[in-house]
Length: 145
Image 1 (cartoon, rainbow, N blue to C red):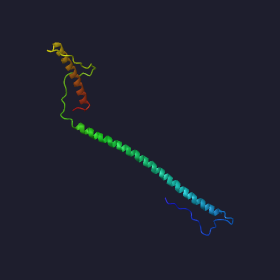
Image 2: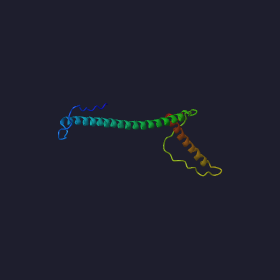
Image 3: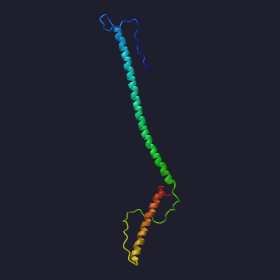
Image 4: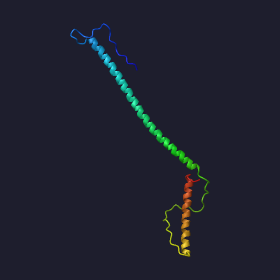
């Protein structure tokens, strides 16, 4: 944008015999002031656009940094998932996903009684059913291969 203000013509009187501005000078002055005001308004509008674009750019940079951090986390996770080691064979037997009370181990006498050994064996069976269900779920979700 080029600012082109009106030029004051030569040989035109600026003031009357009392020293007051003549109408031609007032008109010229009005055009000059309006030109300056319009130029300033255009500059202010351009500055507002620049400020808005700077704010949008800052927001985009924040979003990009957040996305970059998520991609870094994904890259790290993919490294963990790639190194899964040998595949697990599917467990056989009964899977159990029902609620149960945690096992509180009793004091074992020496030598252990048949009832104490049977209680341990029963709970090992419960734990193996829960472990099978857990392994099945992990394999189904792809967390365990």
